[in-house]
Image (cartoon, rainbow, N blue to C red; front, side, top):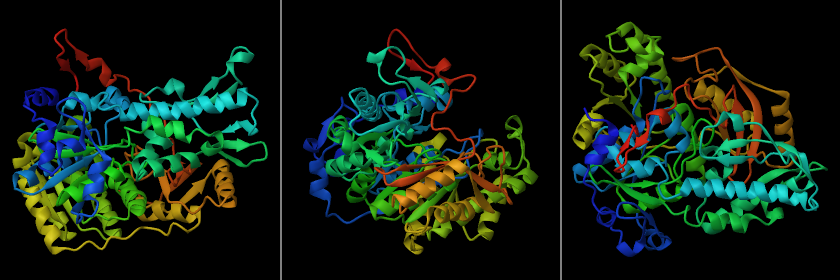
Length: 556
């Protein structure tokens, strides 16, 4: 089989104006970035805002493994399948970050015959949204240090600045740095650090803002640090929200691209789900619901992270709810959760499958806690045996959950027909009774512990003294009535990435708590999770190249 990039390069794309027209979008409602990608204008929203909402389908997965699950691939393939069946469907995805593309992943636009194109553009600079977030973030950093240098009228305590710089690349050397070294003209020395752009509060704000006015208001609420009396200092006090919003004026508009089979896809925003809220923008999803009968979106990593945040943060703010959830798994992933080494996953192993199945079972339970109908998609590998597939089907049947074989990686939309048909049947027969997991007015610790116990299966939560202190301060400042965004490893239901399957009798350790007042949530960092990832021993960048004639290789 061809590589992903080879498949993508063989695709004869349609002009994006033609793809957009299938959703009833006029050429005047597009801002073109070349022939094959465009931004959607505010005038489009004004025209369709009163349309009836389509059905919203969330694609999520078991905890990710080195074996691969194929969540994005399934999302794309399902959209292609529905389109091929004559349904008016649109896909909603996040934009890839350069950090993982050059680091762990090598690409994030789907795979095989279920991809978004132009794949090279999407995986690199796309329409510049992530770079705009980086620029707005670092403008604020520059304004903070300049304010201190120019007399510090707001009496900002350099020891209590919580705002960090950002870049769209994994670079562990920038996690903890000192700025302002040199002479008097070079600023005030202080400790600082970098986040990856996908973890920036600006990214969260971009994905949660309803319009430019809401964007500006949210930016103004960002707490950059505290003054010498302990009072919070905000962006609005620094008078920077207008300039930051200006840098984001184009980035706030959703992007439209196409799949290999020319199904439309809205791609917008890119927060990670392990260190941020893990969903594409409310603006893109809300627009998609007005344009199509079926909207297929995904949330990052496993359902313990992405799905929970999609429900408790995105849906809470947006005021909509999913009609169904597709839970992606593979035989290989479940065997890995059952203790099988990666190099031995090809061999049939029903015992390992039995040991690993509780991971899937827990995710089914979790989705049902939100009142959402569930369909399990088994992403097929050629090493899967009939006995292994039947085992999963039977165990899911015992849970009263339908399964469908997905072959979208090798067959595109046609390979997703079974999945699409069973999804349509589920939507027609089982109503969603969507509900949120916790009351946003509950105390901070109660919200954290609800997520830890109900979703992760923990017996309790421990807090560092620093986390305790921050929670107390947020309560005093009346910033405690916000949803919680858990920063946790994606590889385990626990906060220890090495503990697979369905762990029991463990505690979640909250080592740090931050408030993202502009985004409107509290971030709880657990275990050893980092907001600036590092590169692996052999970065994907080593395999990525461009030839003299412009041919790109190494993007998976």
